[in-house]
Image (cartoon, rainbow, N blue to C red; front, side):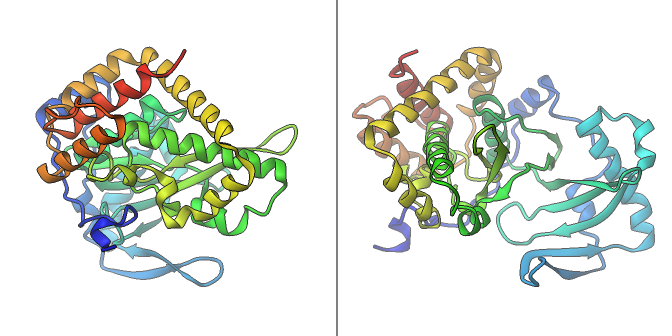
Amino acid sequence: MSDSQRPDVPSRKKFFYPIIDPLRDYLKQYDREIDLPVRYSDLLRFNFHTPLLNKDGSDTLWQTVYYSEGEMKELFPALTYIYALMHIDGDKRSLQQLTVARIDFCSFGNSQPFRIRIINSLNDNYDHFYIKRADASRIYGLELEHTLSPNRIIYISSGDTLAEGHIPGLPGDVFINHRLGTSKFNQIRICKEFVKFNERCFLRLLGDMRSYNFVVDITPDIEGNQYRIRAIDFDQQSYEGRRKFYLPHFFKENNALNNLGMKYITEDTMRQYQEEERSLIAQRVRIARFRLHDLMKVMRIDKISPEEKVKQLAADLGEYHKTDAFDNCNTMGQILTEHMHIILTRTKL
């Protein structure tokens, strides 16, 4: 099988798609578009960089970047203000206790983000947020995550720049390598969450959810732990043409979770978990129906994937669902609308 046929290999580097005017109007309507004092291009003016290593001395693929004194005087107050906009409605009274501790840059991946580390000087507590190039695919992914998942997403769009809040959790690859050897009870809960995560990704067509593109949020409970898998990369929202690319269990990086599922979950139990998640998503659709309607109205006219991928996915999903409902779909938004409708109308509430 060639790389272009494998479900775990993107066919090519993803294109960046601009934000069209109707999407910009949507962002303004729902308070996602705010004029920011810093653009992505401003952060590219660093003088030099050094590799950022983890506690074991291994390369993290991030580079810590450094700016001239003049650049820092301009950038750092603006970045703390952006953080305040995202978390405390821009309350300037809190700015004096917030400082930029470090800025990291990652050239790996599509969005090439900057990660800003913010320190609260009163208690040395720290947090992070990200500055990225705005991409329409990613914005649709963020909005669908905010609307259809159990998670809320913090982000601001400003022209060609995107500011995103940090999504906490243990990186999926680290979790798989170091935290799967827990009690049987916890392992069953992990399997259940992976089934539900798989269902969420497929229903809203979020692709490329291999282990390093999601995190695991662990919450101690009365007996054992509760687990929630959260996507952290939304670049591949409704972009690829292969159905399997939207199903995390097909990626080899997630094989350990698949193996755990085969050990502890029966087919009947898996179907139960899938139905549970579909029912929850259907409830969220009803609650956010006006916002979702406005979003999908724009997405259905937007071109966020090459024509050949749109045709490929329409044919693949038509065969999977055994329907001709996708035959006249010309955009990924149209495909997603039909796909969600088919799945959710089959869900018993």
